[in-house]
Length: 295
Figure: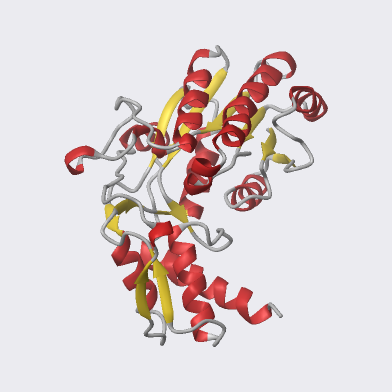
């Protein structure tokens, strides 16, 4: 297939594009050169690409940033999806569209239950609200849309604005003597459903198969890990023994996020293959490379 990816130079896109190419697809990648807030630019880009499939990854992904910039998050994450879907209807009406939503649309998991795709939307941030609105739009647009709802994922290449990567960067900087031996953390008692970014890319690749029915699919491990365990796993791979300091600006409520990906497994055979310890080891090694190579 000819696959057109928005946000292709972002975290997941940089993993997905080479996997699609390795699977034999012709991949066209765009990032900031196509402003998804501009409907005419999106329409022209889709017309040029003439894709058989579209992966819409372009988004502002920071929950914390969304509280500071709710209007911009709505413009990029909701209006960007609207412009993409309208362009697809106009220029590539038969294309399979993978619209990347988020497990954040559900809000916290009550009573530790793994949420499936029938769970109601209870978005708790401007980011989640914009993603929920885009998700609903994708369900109602009449195109061949699959909506992926990924839960937390991490790995090499992720911004340090996200919890595991933020921990890994601080540890690498402490090891290199570029930071005092003190780790800044948020709420370590919150629990999240973590995946390796490669497993998420694999799920997206499988969802592009036209034989997979349209609809919503959680991408999740089915296991909620305390954030404290993520930190412990990283420190176990380091000689650093820093003091841990709670930063009020990083604090989020004690809650759990947990997804049920049975529908994805049944439709595609997908299942997570990378152990979280291996993911964190590679993430820390990547940050060590970035720190050692920076001036």
